[in-house]
Structures are given as structure tokens and as C-alpha cells.
Image 1 (cartoon, rainbow, N blue to C red):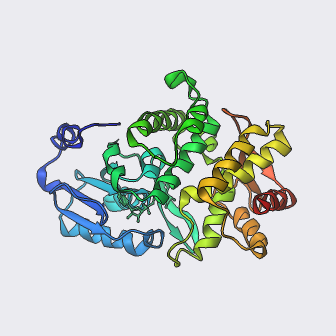
Image 2: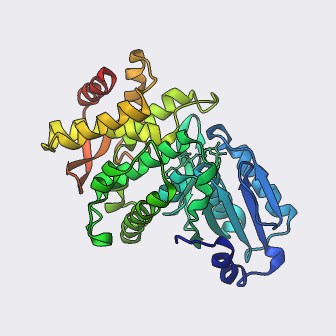
Length: 342
Ligand SMILES: NC(=O)c1ccc[n+]([C@@H]2O[C@H](COP(=O)([O-])OP(=O)(O)OC[C@H]3O[C@@H](n4cnc5c(N)ncnc54)[C@H](O)[C@@H]3O)[C@@H](O)[C@H]2O)c1
């Protein structure tokens, strides 16, 4: 839910819980609410079992019962970990998300996917657990660095490519994204695009909460994207690795290329996104020698239905996604050749 005043939006929700049973877990980078809290220094490397343990210990120390509410305030790393800790503490307690990055607003804080990285594989341990509410206040974005804004915009681009969004506002989200001025990153102008992106995701998740079919459309760009993120993250131990939304943009380029080759998708969206990538995101920092490793990582992706198969969502045109497209290693090589030749 988009809100202009966080405290008024929270008030009726908090009234449903005992004061002693409400706690906050927040990213150190953002402010709290004056409620008992645990502040965590966040990076992709902190999306680990150790951090989950730290949060469980905090819950025990606060004496939380199964009627507790945990408020997660932060970016996607924080909301993913806290959601997982809440889903597993005493077999599951309520949690509420307050996303503070664009990426978390658009994507990570809704839909109920929670989890951590394990054995160098992204989100390989986790649970589906819906937050009781997601309160989106775009004011947080005023302090967000430009790189993180671009990362979030990457997920918005994906949403624009898979859904025309016509049912929400009557205008195609993709066209509006192409018109948005990424040099200015004006938050007021971005707010309706956030609302449209969130509405698209919520509709898809409501129709298929456990990703049995339709929800896979949201994975467009993510088969290649996750592999690129993993290979540059070196098991998530290296700081300064590729931000998630950048990896999604590179993954979208590879998967748009395959959409053109395999499904006859018009070339225009690929050309448009390539221009955006080169101008704002730069080329992917990944050595050509890593192609074999990228393909092996894609074959291990948890989204695959069969072992060692590469499974992608592709599009026939903007707003017309097709799930469960099996990609051969040769086709994956060709798509990576295209991406790295830009
Ligand atoms: N659960 C899902 O459905 C889902 C979907 C997409 C992505 N994700 C996950 O989300 C994660 C990425 O999330 P992210 O991009 O938000 O990264 P992040 O949580 O690491 O946040 C990015 C950086 O911004 C800082 N930050 C957060 N809010 C800020 C603010 N308002 N002002 C200044 N700095 C701020 C953080 O401390 C961090 O350094 C990945 O782990 C990805 O797997 C999950």
C-alpha cells in the first residue's frame, strides 16, 4: 500500500497487537520508529544464516510469542532476511514490510518470497510467507544513492516488459518508463510508476502465490541475472558486487535477445533497453572466461523444473510473456556472446 504518512498508516495496524509484542528490525542506514529494535548492517553477504540467528536471538530476548508483530524497515536484503526469520520463529509470526529502497518497494517487499543465500547460491534457502502489509512511503528514496535507484529501476523495467499495465491506468508502463528522465530521478514523477509496478506484481502474486505457473513471468531476466550476480559476487563475500537490479537489466538483455531469436519478439524493446543499459548501467563487469561457470549456475537455478536444464521466461512482445522456455547451453552461450559484445 502506497502511503503519504507512514505513522498514520501504521497506527490502526499496531493497535491489533500488544505493545510488548511489536518489534522493529531495521537496516542501519535508515531511521527507526522509536519501538524496540535491532539494527543490522546490510549487504548481500549478510543475507546469511548467521544474520537469521541474530534476529531469532533478538526475538527470544524480547520474549516474542506467536502473537507478535515484526516490522522490517530496509531494502530487499533486510526484508528478505527478516521475513524468513519471522516465517520460521515459532513456526511463523506476523511481519510487516516498510521498504526503503526502490527495488524493495517495487519487488522484494511484496509477494511473500523470503530467504537467504546459501553455498553461494542466491535465495537458495527460504520460505513463502506473506507480510501482513507492505507500507510504501516514497520519501525514503530521498537519501538513496543513484546506483541503488538505478538498481530498483531495473525491476521496474522488467515489470514494464512483462505487463502492459493497461488494466491499472490505461497506459502502457513500458512507454512511461521510456519517457522517465533517469538523469533527474524525480521522486514525485516516479511515484505513479511505483504504484503501477506494485499493482502489476500484486495482481500476479494474488493469482499464483506459490509460483506454480503465472508468477514465473516475474522471473523474466532473472535466470541470466542471478547467474551474473552470483559469478560477480564470489559467493557474496566480495563487497561492491553487482547490484541486483543491474544484474536484472543484463539478464533482461540476454533474455530479450533469446526472445527475438526463439519467439520472434520485435527487436525494438531489445534496442531500447540496450541504449538505456549502455547510457546508465554500463557494461556487465564479467570476464568472458566465466561463461562456462555462468551456464553451470543457470543449470543449478532453483527455478528449474528438471536438473541441469536452463529454464527462462521470455516474451513474444511487450506485455506478452511466455514461461518455461527451455534454453540449450549453445543458446545460452549465444545470448551471453550478444550481451558481452555490446
Ligand atoms: N523477495 C523477493 O521477491 C525479492 C525480489 C527482488 C529482489 N529481492 C532481493 O532483494 C535484495 C536487493 O535489495 P535492495 O536492492 O533493496 O538492496 P539492499 O537491501 O542491499 O539495499 C541497498 C543499499 O541501500 C542501503 N539503503 C537502504 N535504504 C536506504 C535509504 N532509504 N537511504 C540510503 N540507503 C539505503 C542499504 O543499507 C544497502 O547498502 C537482493 O538480495 C534480492 O535477492 C527479493
